[in-house]
Image (cartoon, rainbow, N blue to C red; front, top):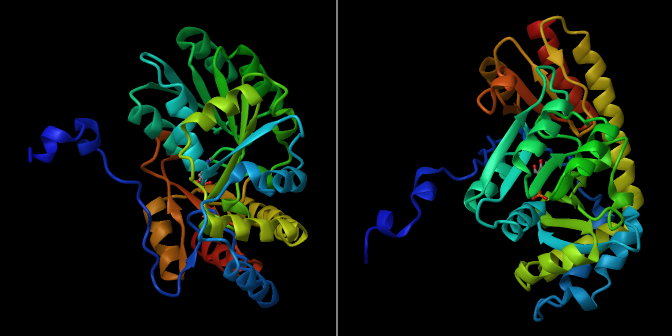
Length: 356
Ligand SMILES: Cc1ncc(COP(=O)(O)O)c(C=O)c1O
């Protein structure tokens, strides 16, 4: 065999894998926007029974399954929209990018944002245009519109609200971007459940719009279920390249069960939203830090020294995310997922003591 460097693409050899943090024992995980809530024991045993009877002998057949109709009903996806499923929305980001990866095609996103937009663009040999947001992490609309004119990207990703900042850009500005775009626009609503606005009701109505959502942030990151809604024409093309059996029977069974418990899911979402507001107000009162407005299930906070803050919270039993090295605008920023009320009170009091 030839050496790996003769066989594997040089850009892949030079890159590193997506970093997944190891969680120290007895540490509360607040680094990846997972929900802090497990199903209560009675629902767990009900789910156990369903999983026991899941048809794992068979390949899943999404077209014949009632999962998509259930999904549409639970999340108010317009009946006229078409839906494709992914093994997490990560997989959909990958395949949507692949769909548009013609030679010289470009991908655009507003920086700082979810790193997988850039990584997938590069993976498929597309030029990535990152348009920086303003220093206060708000959208620089003029700059985005100018770059659209200049580069005519085949694909624009807008995380709405954005990760890792929590910012939800003004709807009117995003509408202007969709109108100005000559290619497809993916509104990535991974955090849509925690937001005051959504583009989901326009899915299937606006030709170049795809709305991406996930089960991950509302309690089910382990199921790996994402879904994209849009026009039949685009979803048909996407379905041509998605792996035929990308979903699995156990996840689908658990997700269907979850949709039956939508009231429990919504209750948790509301709790986390009100916890986010409480934490935001408390952080605003701490002199030494700056907290950014968030419509997601996390808060991004500028602290005097992000590494020290990361270590301090780790010593106190909380794993958070140090964003410092991700982008110049995020220097000394940390991202903290909203957890259970008792945990939020604890990490807030650590920060109050350190910076108040
Ligand atoms: C903006 C955004 N989109 C998509 C994803 C991927 O989510 P998943 O693959 O778990 O559905 C994430 C995960 O953090 C995210 O922040």
